[in-house]
Every structure is written in C-alpha cells, then in structure tokens.
Length: 388
Image (cartoon, helix red, strand yellow):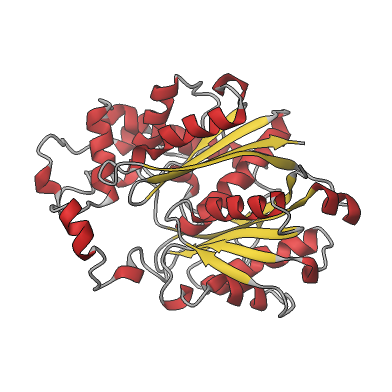
C-alpha cells in the first residue's frame, strides 16, 4: 500500500480570541488563506496539482459560513479548479480532515491533498452557529430528557469521577505554560509558525504562570445551565486550567509517497494508524481513552513504543485522566505544552497538534507520535504518526 506522507505542516501563532487579540483584525478566510499559501510556497508546489483541500471549522456561521475552506483557497490564489470542503467534528475537525485526506491517499482517490482548519473565536463567537436554534429534536429529547450539558460541566464531572484535586489541575496548567514558554525561547516553534501581520509568537502563552497564581482564580462554570443536576461537583475548573478562546489556522500538505518522490519532495512523516470513536455525550470528554485503545490495537504498537503523546488540553482533566488510565510517562505528554498555553482555535487545533508533534519528533529523534482529541457531544479522534 502506498504510504500517505506528511510533506509539511504549518500554523499561525495563536491570538487571544477576543476583540483586540493579536489576530482579531484578520478575517478567518485570510487566516486560513495565509497557511494555505505558505504550504505551497515553502515546498515549491504548483497548487493546481492539489486534488482537494479539506478544512475543519466548528462555528460555521457569519464570516466562517458557506464552506470557508473553498473561499480561503481562492483567497490564497489557488486555481479555481481546486475543490474544497469544510467538516465539523467539533474540536477534532482538522484532525478528522487529516484522516480524510490521508485515507483518500491510501485509497488511491488522491495524489496530493491539504488538510487544514481555522477558527476566529474573536469574530465568530463559540456557539454562534447554533445561536437561537433548538438543536436537540424530539428523538434526542426522548433519549436524554434532561438534555445534554456544556463541556465545562463535563470537565467538572471528569475531575470528580477520577478524583483530580484542584491543585493537581492547576499544577498541570502551569506546567503547560512553562513547557510552551521554554520551547518558544529556544526557537522550537519557529519552523511551524507562519507570520500573520507580523504576529509570530503565541499570544496565549504566559511564561510567568504558576500553580499558586492559578489557585486564586474562581471556578468558571458554577452558573451554567444544568449545573443544578450535579450536586457532587465541587467546582475545580477555572479559566486558568482550561484552554482559552483562541484565533488561529493550520494546514498540512499530505500526498502519496510516490507523488512526493516524483516531485522531489522529502516526506517528514507518515500516517501510521487512525481511530475515531463515540463516548458518553454527558461525560463527553473521556473519549480520548477508548480512541487511544482503538488506535493502539490497530497499530500493533504499545504505548511504550510511542515517543510523544499530544492529548489536547481542552481542560486539564482530559490529559490527566488519559495519563492515569494508561499509566503514561508524564515527560512524554504534551512535551511542548498544550492548548492551555498554546490556545485552542477549535477547527484549527487538530493540524496545530500535528505541526507541534512532527517538529518535536524531528528535534528529539523520536519515531512515533500519538495525537488524540476530545470532541463535543462525546467523540474523539486518535492518530499515530511515524517520523521519516
């Protein structure tokens, strides 16, 4: 079978997802266009050769509506002959785009494809695509008569059920900032970040963050709808141990090994194994555990064979539950920091994690990397990548 290889993967630096954030003045179409144009320019690729562009975006409304991936590639100067589609698997949207792209190569449907993602949370607020709409329907209300719950409550339930104390959550969050800051200081993100309007550093990283400072923050979800249903919650999730609202875009150039050889391009990594799974939509965020079990089983690898794990830090309990369930080495878990520090621009986070993972494997000589992401309504993707 012809390998699906990663020739390059890039991202913007993160911007705070609020008015005045470093990227808030840039239309999301232009954010995504910037990384698409950079991919073909960095690799001397004729964009007319791209068979498809698959993009992730969660809030597909307003400025992100009407298939933003297509409008972004046109804005990037790609030929009109290049098609595009936009997918929504919640926080894992661009990781799923990567799966679809690589699976298309493996199936022989594509020679060259781009997986990408974008989210401008400053310009298109979280939940904008569902504003004012009843998204449940009669069948869902029959199955879950009390309704589904916000992710913040799910994070609280994870902390309760796995007995994760507030100081443990805050210590993990502080470590995320420390690791991200240390990587930035040594230039570890330089190869993956594409400048936007002169912005080249992750705005969400706070080098001075400490667990003691985070301990002073108040819980964030005490008043959200549904909170009264869970008296066992003692409120441990704060803005400090959660990922911040973020603007950003990312993209990966994926092709068959034969196409890379034909074009004289050096593959940096290959897709080794894939998995996606559903989980309890109330607990919601623990899907990373069955997704990881599934991808390890499919790969034939043990966790010990994996050199680095990228478990998206939507909330601190997610990677901590994952670490506890697998007895994973904390030094290999999010070694360059995670979304608590680097930000979580929803639709862009999957290929952002891939960029950071590939660069880390190259810098350390590691062979295998595992990436997994919890997703709204109880789902998760998992991917194993092999450095070449």
